[in-house]
Figure (spheres, rainbow, N blue to C red):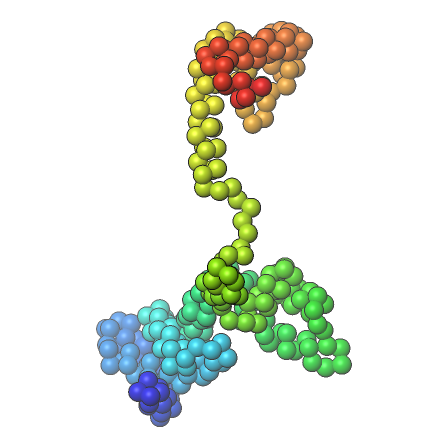
Length: 288
């Protein structure tokens, strides 16, 4: 009740604040910019609080408290005052409108859902315009629904149809906790998270794969010592690089035929396999 009363008092004070004439606004802006006159700042912001309230009211359908929206809009108003350049001869209200809207929109994106959304400019435009465009396209004799409506909105906002469908589903219902019970069974309640399926390997499998990879690298480096310089060069360029060199290219570099390169490579691979198995026969599964 106290917050509602404070909000009403703020609105009444904003609506009763006098308008500023262009000359007076310019003088106050100069005093604030050059002298950091707090009284001048107070007069400018007080005279434009009705602009903040008007802007905040346009976003009230997102379900957040009007008083919070007004406070965030006031933050944007102060930011505009800090950046305003009166010598450009632009009215402060014109300049401040963008900052007020941006501050309110950022607050909504941070607090409307526990899942962060609208990280890009296109996604923000989709978030704040989807309801309006959907309502407009669903009215009239040629109303659109489903895929056709998503296609039209995607074209208008320059996003993908998948993004439109995903945002529409997010705006259609509130957040649901993964710990919310879905059903009761013999062992107790089943939560939403119990039905989430991940195709990723289990943690113990990931650790095991990582250890095996490290072992393979150690064994390979040890086995490479049995190769001659030319064999090592061919194996490195043919087998140990993402884009392996061709037999012909290696032949030109080494001054031999590509068939000779293939023979040396085959012999080097046999030597590597023999070296690995000689160290430990249990490693046969890794070098087969």
